[in-house]
Image (tube, rainbow, N blue to C red; front, side, top):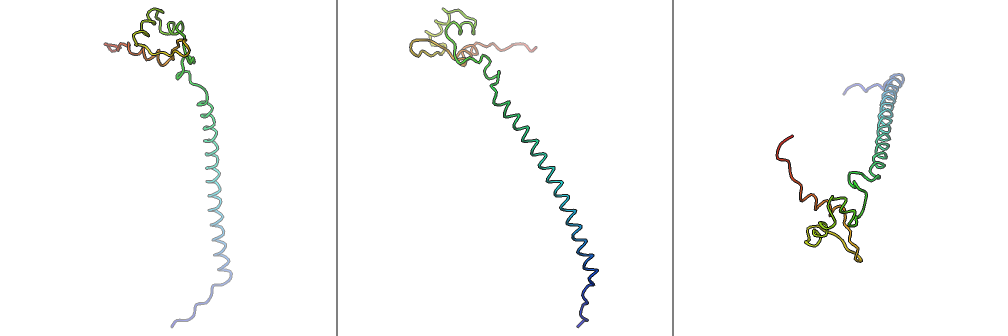
Length: 127
């Protein structure tokens, strides 16, 4: 059996406790700085996201170059650069799609572009 341990002196306990408190305060300060940096980063990302949402909410001129939902016969001829008779022949032979609600003929841009794109000739020589 050994001699019983003597309890540490109150001043030693106070010094030990003071060291723990100081280390905890330093850790807390570091965590507060990290939290502040994270919040600032998140606020910046939120602002960038809001800007992106505004950009995406606007219609793109690339997705709708004409911004026109439909074309009548005259407008379709102008868009394609062809005459009315030729367009009538294309319709009669089923070479171009069209709509005819209530007897009035109209075309969507997609239909006109689909017909035009069938006649695209690929380049044979590199630029």
